[in-house]
Length: 426
Image (cartoon, rainbow, N blue to C red; front, side):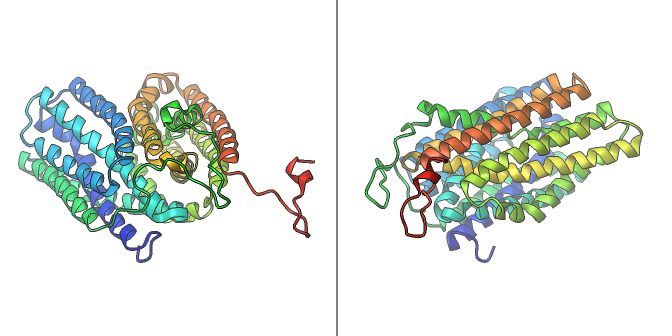
């Protein structure tokens, strides 16, 4: 944190993200209870509220990417934080399902826009060391979530309307603090659209991609597969707790341990994992490891039977495996989203890439509850095998696109002449 990639601007941004995620942790730990006991929503209304938030979040990423091609990233990020500040404070005055839907949708839109803009900011200030920055961010974010959950526990212990409102205000203040810190940074280099980039020899960039991500089938294929490569999030937060409650003899007290394991491992290991994925082709090859880790997790869940102790042990192992998959995905997905995008339109491309997380958050829980867990242990095995197979597809297509966008240099012999036989694979 003292010398992060990107220098002073990156250090300030990481601090802003720490405060932001602390507030988010406060709200994540208390939101369902607030909507249930304070807002008075029933289960169906709560499900509708969360679904609307998910759909609104899907729109936030491409909107942020589109605007970042035309306006300063720093300014847009400040606006996103202030939007979240206003809408979250609106919860204190929103009564009834209709106003709550509007407020939550706008908050989710600002959340996803802010995350995309943070990604773009980091890409510009950290440059080639963006994977190290991403690892630092992941560690900082998880620490913030943990602190926020602890703060929320104090308010939930009181469990009065005023206590819930205090938690909302605490989260809103975290957005205000983040906006103030972002205002102290400088706009990173590279804002605005670049018509054409040339290499050192004066040649134009290879014409293998479209000017817009919506006309680039190769990049859209990456985004679609990356949605599947993000299922570890739903498995950790939805699959493991529900499988424990409805299909095993493990005690309910094991559920909090999933978050403890996940947070601890991410904080402890994210930097070490990122050190092994420092360039695009390493990121592409790591996608295969993600598929294997998630397959192993699903296999353990399918076998999580027996008594309370056996089931608990299996579920804790599954939590470690899905966290391992998350560690790989957080680095490989980030690096590939940047490296597979053309530099001349990177902002809009990263906006499209940000949709993968939002779509997964909306569709992932439905997939797990409506299909995987309904099918029992076989459902987990099918899911694991499908993700592992698609990870191979993602790996191959990513490597193929990287070879087009960033061709590897042709090897030369000792005299400095190009070795054509090596280039042709002879």
